[in-house]
Image (cartoon, rainbow, N blue to C red):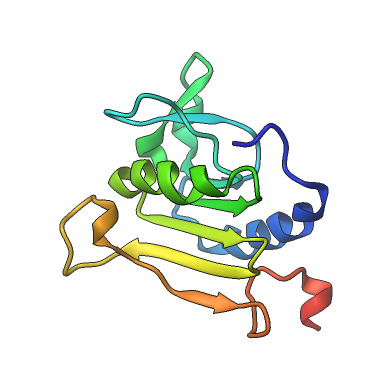
Length: 147
């Protein structure tokens, strides 16, 4: 998680949260709250810009939630976080999180990384990326812009 999201990202995060809420697995919460998640074998924790996680993960004491409770993470990249979002987080999330969504706010491009059944399990190499230009219908545009 970056020190703070850019103000212009709020509408995109809110729109994405609203779209994901009806589809979250039972017992999972969609949130943009700044929580750090820890992952097996990872040297550091990460705080995604948006997460869908099992609510039970937040019943524990402490300041770090279990990364294995995540069912989806979304990162909105900025110039300062792009390398970490695309490299470090992709590697870490790719081992544990079923869906990792990257929204490149500079290129106005989206990539949804979902497990590829033909690839090796729980590995970043097992993921395929599907990009979309902003000129196409973008599912994370604020509701007012889609009308």
